[in-house]
Image 1 (cartoon, rainbow, N blue to C red):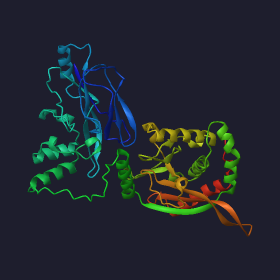
Image 2 (image 1 turned 45 degrees about the vertical axis):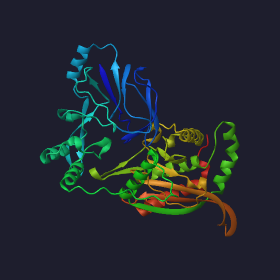
Image 3 (image 1 turned 135 degrees about the horizontal axis):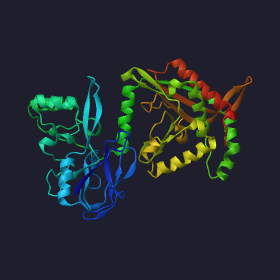
Image 4 (image 1 turned 180 degrees about the vertical axis):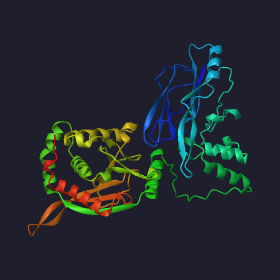
Amino acid sequence: MRYAFKFPDIGEGITEGKIVEWYVEKGQSVKSGEALVKMETDKVVTDIPSPKSGVLTERYGNVGDIVNVGHVLVEIEIEGVAPEEAKQIAREIPQAKTEVPIEEKSFGVVGTLEVAGEGAYLPASGEGFIQKSTDLQEKVPVKAVGTILATPVARAMAKDLGIDIREVTGTGPAGRIMKEDIRKYFEGKSKPAQPLQKEPEIHTNIEIQPLSMIRKTIAKNMARSKQNAVHMTVIDEIEVEELYRERLNHKEEFIRRGSKLTYLPFIMKAVVDALKEHPVINAELDLEHDRMLLKHYYNIGIAMDTPEGLVVPVVRDVDKKSIYEIANELLMLEKKASERALTLDDLKDGTFTITNYGTIGGMYGVPVINYPQVGILGVGRIQEKPVVKDHQIVIANVMALSLVCDHRIVDGAEAGRFLKQIMDYLHDPGSLLLY
């Protein structure tokens, strides 16, 4: 029996991936759980394991190809299944699908969405066979529309307008066809064909560099944040002479214990203590249901610079960890980020984000909110500056902080009080436990 294994939905909104490396060849025997291919998504590089044991009969896509979620990666001849039994199974499971509730938000029409499962059993005779295609799209008979990702509204529109829904390219999650896709397709078919436009000439001194998966996602997420959140910024400076000495006093001990003490664990603890007093900044705005989601757990995302682009791994339950434990976890995440070894679990479910651009020399900045979170703290570099103490001008270490909040949910006064509380903790860090 032939089994078509599709690129699975691995979560976190991932809709496509790039083939980095094939581990298997056509005709090779594979075991369930054995890695088939290494895929680069917009968040992680991960191995995709085989769901079945058998012999690989087809392999779709070459290294460098982009594959959408739900498209066939390989076909496997399942061991120990007779042809007649395979046909019976194929009749019983014509389409491996699941119905999940969806909503087309523009009109609030609730229905069901037919989603292709992780694989479909195919009879050995080739009946209903998913043909190999250079664009990795599935060719299916007209009656098998259940394998097309589309909302009920889109299907009804296509039927009314006499459109073959298989010809429409979906722009929704995982390539889902929305009603707007049907409308644009219909308008395009109704207009006279336009003459082909010449590709603009590129100057000979311009280097063309394709966008990486991470860079495309950064661009998309930054635009989404600016389009959906109303950014408000509060900037201030804090004298951190005590924090400077505290870190210096314990730096060698952390090294001796195999860790590294930076200012970041102190800042994270200060942020979490302040978030407990200002829960609206550790929240999410749900306008669709006219509510706020106040999160009483504290998972802090840390923006990290890598050669491929910005990633934001998450340290979970910061309120329950000591500065020593946080320092160890940051060290581990930095190593994984530099090796492109972060997993989806490392990146998901953050409630607030910190970006420490001071480590590369920046003093002030206005960071972009990691939407749908409602706040992000930017940390500038520490430098010696003249400050007034006891009516005397002295030289002290000063840190610059930039707090950006979503003004739809956080008022200016709330943001100011939150930042001041962080500054108070950092000015007197003695209450933040080290071990």
